[in-house]
Amino acid sequence: MPETSLKSLAVIGAGSWGTALSILLARNGVHTSMWGHLPDHMQALCNDRSNEEFLPNVKFPDKLEPCIELQQAISVSKDILIVVPSHVFGLVLEQIKPYLQADSRVAWATKGLESGRARLLHESAAEILGPDIPLAVISGPTFAKEVAKGLPTAVTVASNNTEFAQTLAATLHNETFRAYTSTDITGVELGGSAKNVLAIAAGIADGLGFGANTRAALITRGLAEIMRLGIKLGGDAETFMGLAGLGDLVLTCTDDQSRNRRFGIALAQGMSQQQALASIGQVVEGIKTTEEVHNLAERMQVDMPITHQVYQVLYNNYDPHKAVHDLFARQQKAEFQQ
Image (tube, rainbow, N blue to C red; front, side, top):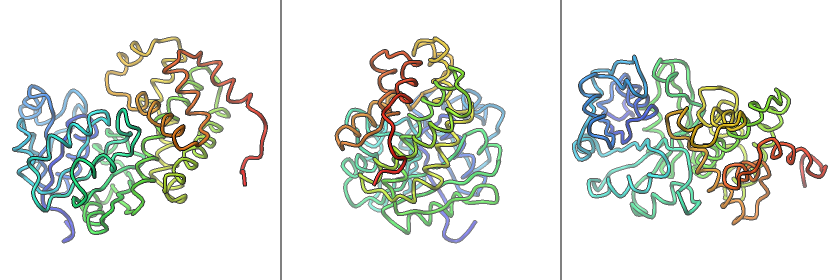
C-alpha cells in the first residue's frame, strides 16, 4: 500500500455498493469496518463472511469487519465513507455526527440529491457537520458486481480538500481499480445524480422498442442538459465529459445491470412503478432524483426537456410512448446554442 494511503476506514452502508467498496478496500490492505442499519442483516454478514443478499458468492477479505453497532464501526477510523441511498443521507450524517473526531473526514459514494430540498449532498454535509470537516465524493461508471470481481474500473474522487482527495484515491487505487482526483465536487455530484434520470429515459425508449438511434440521441442530448444545469451551478464543463459525467451516463443508460434502466424498461412494458420496483428488489435512485433534478432545474431556470418528460411519466402518470414522442416533436433548433 502506498505511504499516502489510509490504514483504516469505516464504511457506512452494507448494500451491494457499500459491500463492493469494502471488499476493494480490504483487499488493498485497509482495515475496513462496515455497518448497515439492519442488525439481523449485519449478523448474517458476520456469520457468512459474505453478503449473500446483495453481492452473493464473494467472500470477505480478512481485513473486512462487519459491525452490528454503529459506534463500533466508526471507532475504527477517523475517516468515514458513506454508501447509502440519497434519501437517508442526511439522517446518516446526523447519526454519525456524535461519534466523529476532531480530525475526522467524511466521503460518500452516494449518487443523488438531498431529498425534499433539491440540493447537492456536499451542501447538506456542510450544513449538518459544519464547515471544518473535509468532504469528498466518489463517483464514476461502476457496477458493484464488477468491482467485487476485480474487473478493471475507473472512478473520480472529488473533494474540497486536495490532500483528502489524493489520500482517498490512493487508498482505492490498485492494479484493476484506477482513481482520479478532482476539485470539482459540484460537477462530479451532479453528473452521478442526473445520469440516473437519463437511464430511466433510455430504459423507457428501449422498452418501447425505439432502437439504438433513439438511445444514442437520448444519451447525447441528456448529457447536454446535464451540462447546462451543472455549469449554471458552478461545475466545470470538462467534468461532464469525464468519468463522472459521460462515463457514468453511458454505463447506466446502456447496460441492464443498471436498476434505473431496468426500471424504465419495466414501465414501458406496462408495469406499475410498484411492480417494477418489486421486480428489481433494490432502491432505484432515479425515481426520487427525477423529482429533485426537475425542481432544481426549474429553480435555476435551466431547460431540461428529457428530465421533464421522465418527471411527467413518474409523477403525473404521463404515457411513456407519448413522452418520447413529445421529445422528438419539439421545435427544431441549432444543436449548440450561442
